[in-house]
Image (tube, rainbow, N blue to C red):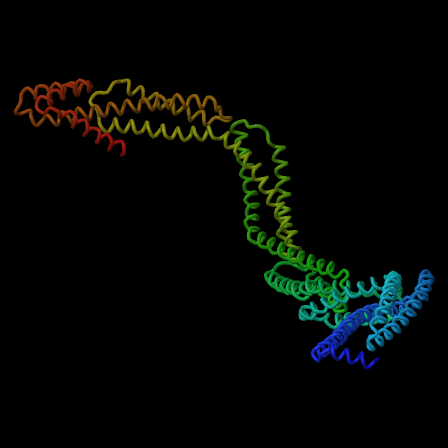
Length: 586
């Protein structure tokens, strides 16, 4: 029967059909293999992810942090309970990680033998386990971070200090030349700070955080001191090794120059002061060499202040010397002149007092003599201390100023007295000068009248001239009287001046008129022989001239000449003015 079936099948299934069936079976097998490989690759990829997740969890340094926390709990009772809890959780995490490690190995084996389904099932369970482990690890890590927070803070702070320390070292290296003698000390400070950093790390490694914190405070204090030195040393050295030594040299040179000039400077004790300042400066530089800047700036400023004061004192003494030396001779001569002025004023007072009945100045002159004696004593004292050369010129200048002020004030007082006395004498002096002028004018009048010998002069001229002489005699008598009657003198003088000057003008006019008549007759004489009429007129003019009728004679003569030469009158006037000017000048 079996054979029949087979035969039937052979009859039904042809060779082509068999081939197709074989190809189908091969394809199914290939597809199955590909599908299995894909599932295996997917499983392998998922396994890699789980391994990565496992490694990430395991990379958390729980053990290191726990050891730190345990060490911290030994010195900090507050942290002991929390650390114990962490230890229990840490053990649990470690146990679960071991289980996860074993599960990963089993999954790897399953994947390797292509038991993908079993591997996937195992990986699903493992994923959940790793996630729970991740949460537990994070929790333990957070707790440990909280416990070790103080260490982290200290680590951040120390790292910041290290950065600042590196900057300080760099700044010091770049500017090493400006720290001069303090370089060795700065190097010691740097080495000391570096040792402090090493000690800090040792305390941190031993989890002695409190001791590490104390060390950190010492590091911070040492760095502040180093930074202070780096900032403050350059200007201090500039002043201590540059400015102040130059000032000391300048003052020493200035002191020598001015002393050679003859200025008294011993009282300033310049040499001793400069020695003290130099010693202070040396002490301060030694402090800087040893890194001690406290009070150094104050000391240097005080040295500078003291040097400036010494320099100012030297300059004041020099200026005082110049002022006194250049003007003392003038002042001493002024005092001598003052003595002469007082003597002259006293003599003038004696004369004025007797002559004009001036007010009594006996008490005033007694006070004046006392002041003069004091002034002379001041002058002698000033001259003596200048010659001794043992007193500062600033002190001498004060005495000089006092003498100058006293002399000036005294001079003003004497000048006012002298003005008062001279004012009393001025009327007499003026009267004497005016009397001399009046005498000269009267003499000139008499000389003119005598010189021109006028043919007829009225008796009034002699009377007027006599009256003028009497007036001048009266003035002389008044001047000779003592005490002098100034009011009467001024009145008589005023009347005499008016009268004599009026007489002088009248005589001048009379003489001028006579000269014009003479010139007119002389001018007309050249026409007498030719013109009888002119001769007759000129004869009439001569008669009038001899009779003292000068105006009438001038009028007749001019009219006669005008007939021959119109305008000749102006020439005669000009000629007469020229002659009169010559006579006046004579």
